[in-house]
Length: 115
Image 1 (cartoon, rainbow, N blue to C red):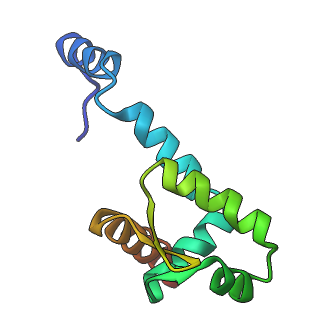
Image 2 (cartoon, rainbow, N blue to C red):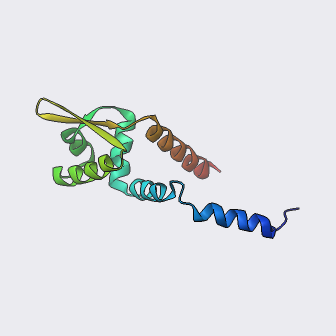
Image 3 (cartoon, rainbow, N blue to C red):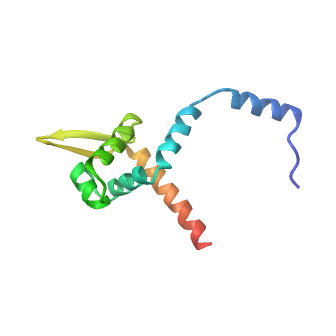
């Protein structure tokens, strides 16, 4: 049977929570991923990389300014990266961590729906 935390464990957990240890960045990351437009952009990039703003506009039906605004936020938090080739800027996921996080979240949500 489960037992309540003892005083020593409570003190240890309080000490753990008093240190930031990247949790502020995690809060920002989950806020970024919690937006439907940004999640749509990430979803498209998990299927095909790179994509340009025009591709993202055509797939989402959104205006260029709205897509660019969201891409700026994703770039600022190292979710996507950009590469200028000629007159186009091509976007892709920053690294494998973003893809892994997306896949884990997707898997988790699919499990909930099938249960």
